[in-house]
Image 1: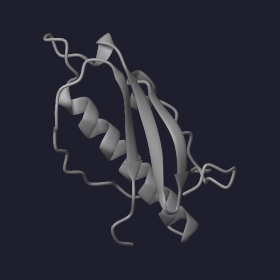
Image 2 (image 1 turned 45 degrees about the vertical axis):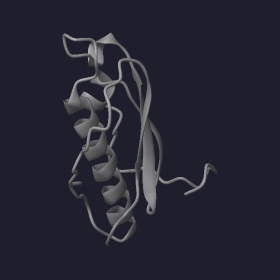
Image 3 (image 1 turned 60 degrees about the horizontal axis):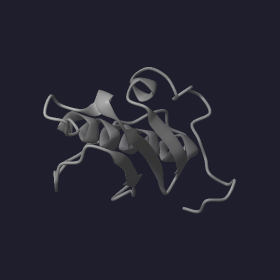
Length: 107
């Protein structure tokens, strides 16, 4: 995937709505070969102990995988798909930027 204007977004659906906006997800780039999104971490993402809630990571991964899969499927004549994730937590964070990148494993 490149950073050029050739990125493909889902044309049939406005995807910058609902939970995506609630969690502050910035949809950067999506195409048939994957996608990328970011969240700028702030206090709304924290558990009571000041670290990011693990559900945020799972949500970002699920969202990016689903959008990426749907972009590819629509380009092949399909309609939509659901991404499946397995999230591993490497260390706790309380601020910064989290970037999720999707890469298709099979089609």
